[in-house]
Amino acid sequence: MTTAIALTIAGSDSSGGAGIQADLKTFSALGVYGASAITALTAQNTTGVQDVYPVSADFVTAQITSVMSDLAVDAVKIGMLGNEDIVQAVAATLELWNGPPVILDPVMVAGSGDPLLDEGAEFAMRSHLFGAADLITPNLPEAARLLGAEIATSEKMMLSQGELLLTLGAKAVLIKGGHREGEDSVDLLLDGQNIVRLAANRIQTNNTHGTGCTLSSAIAAYMALGMPLLEAVQNAKSYLTQALIEADTLQIGHGAGPAHHFHALWTPEDR
Image (cartoon, rainbow, N blue to C red):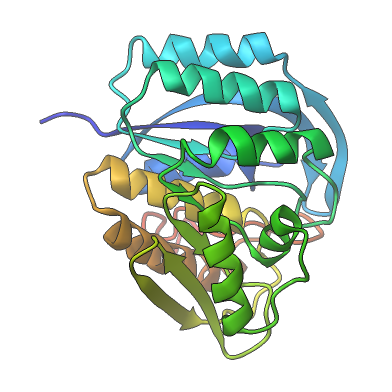
């Protein structure tokens, strides 16, 4: 048997609920070995982001090269990149190690509203990373910002924006509807040929910190295990939904706490 390995390229969340920490927890919870390349250090907690310290682009390159030259990486998840230099470094380095599927979560703003990507990096992401990614996973504000459009308020608008994102070079788009109101949380998966509607009951919890990171890393984990894209997305959405259902069993911080990544592994006594 071989060990499934996933690499996350993202920022660090000092409170552990999002970013690299959420990704590695998700990989572990789903039975995948996690490696990481850190793009930025953040001072943040459940109430917001207090400071960001970007890593140099050269050192991001060194981290990715170190991992890819030794480990047989089966999938790559990309999260917070921060600035244009890092975007270009990640794109150039991954091109040298072409092979594993790439899941790009275009992180621009933290759930608290704090910016995590500068304007120059947005253009670089569209130009250099969309074509390299097997899937991009924008939420509604991110999709709107990438397109210079209004935030979608209906599934028809979501579909239209997803199709526009495909024209920018993405192979497939999962446009996430978690920011909408309604009984169900509906995502749309588009690959240029098929459109799949993915619905789950909307979970009433304040503990939603790091949900985007968790979903994209779960997709990467399932693809590392050999699942095709649609099956990986479906399983990842189910995993996140259950992590949100169990989120209120945790008491973490004074703001928006994290989802429960290890909900299937912790016993009631652990909780």
